[in-house]
Image: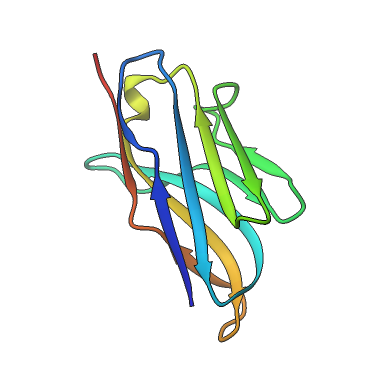
Length: 120
């Protein structure tokens, strides 16, 4: 169906920046939306940012003004530019998409996640 592969995570100091990438592959017909979710140890997975097929974006209040989500339609890739990182941004970031493939209509797909650690 659809596979999502994240990259770009790592260790960064508070105030630093990281850029996450998520590439979609498979028998993709269309993508309704793509987004990023974060899961910290002991917590549930929460929304960080999303972008729709029309380019509309949405962010959690905690990252507004610091993170920017964008996409490359040709590459079927979504990015998350993270600036002014804080310790509370630490967690595993999962890429998500709502997409239609050659086999299924509008299904949810998740990547394996990439670790982001903000620490001095």
